[in-house]
Image (cartoon, rainbow, N blue to C red; front, side, top):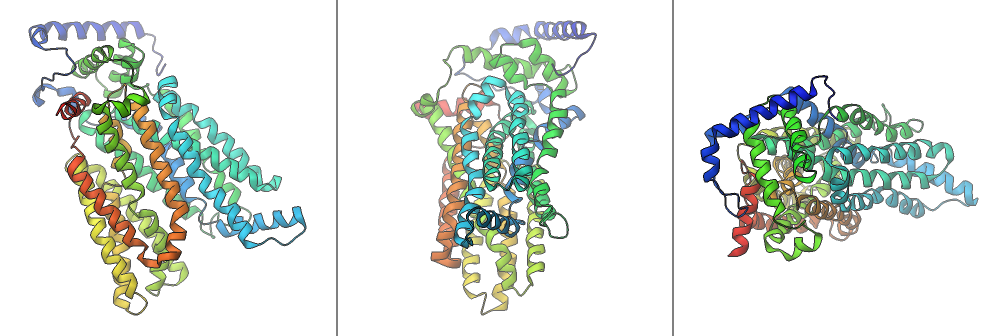
Length: 523
């Protein structure tokens, strides 16, 4: 239980009495309203006072507890292997030579290192596919807490790998932390979506991507040679992933499970009301509770959504297609290619190697800043608008970047423009495409379909990430700087799809969104 109060029973009775009083006051209105799940009576904005509640201390605490221990793992373990790559490759080479007595070929070391890096995405695919089961079986909060067991195992493996002279321990550790990150990518946005007031759902969902960008930047800074990117300290650099896990294990038990999970999945009405009261910081939660009860009653009329039904039922297949496409769009946008090329582009503009690396970290800092700004914009401009601006802008930016890179060695002007276009690309990505896909899937589905749909969407995202990480280098070697033409074409297609198919979900209830998809499926 998330709090232990001696007056627990008295609190429950007072909440119940207030609910009864509110229900009696609006009895005439309630008798006229339909309870059929396919019909919707729009509620005037002026009457939904509890929906318009802003942030409070407890909600901020719950957001921090959920996000800092989950998306930090995702971002930190994505970026932490870049800086010490040469050190770890030399260590792998020494181990291979000691085992065989024969000098190690660099190609063998490169293969081992590539496996260690890319197996993180394989773990993400596995973790993503397990999200639905874990979310239903252990709850959103319970799943996040249980997931930290994988972090502990990872730290033990990666921390003692050098002492044990076993690079296999690094590979297994990367697989486990990948599974952890895949689960986090589904569970954390689901938890955030279900604890947020409707008017803050997008902003709170963006926090997941914000912490990813911050943790990637932290991993780049800590990996500097003057800090922890040294021969003696790189195992400790890998082990720092335990810090956010400890933070979550300490703080998240103090927060409630999501009210929707408690009511709709477990049928615990009073526990759900108490959780919602805790999160909102007020007992005036009648309207929000009535909304959840209406969803709960409608869910009783339909069977539990299975993976098969997601593909067979057109009212579910349409939002699933949208969720999968925005996940693919995020990974195939070319952001990984731009970040890979960034240091080289900065060096082409005649920055020395150290300055180019610092400039790359500056780009990471810009990513953090723009994600922070998008947290504000997402509730003002809307999800669809930011996605369109992001992908359309990246399409134009990528075309211009391809042209500038073609002339960058011969022209200083083209080289400087390339630097500006790299920064602009990151700005456009952070505006919407970087953050919105993570929480959009939770907005498109009701409580019954959300876990299964999230499993598919997150697994697709990590699979696409794996394809890009494996396929980008061969593609880059074949096409050079013209590799960006491929990404420009994809960005154009994704922008067109978003314009035609993706609905605006800002300030809409889950029932309003699912009702819209039912109407589309009947047409």
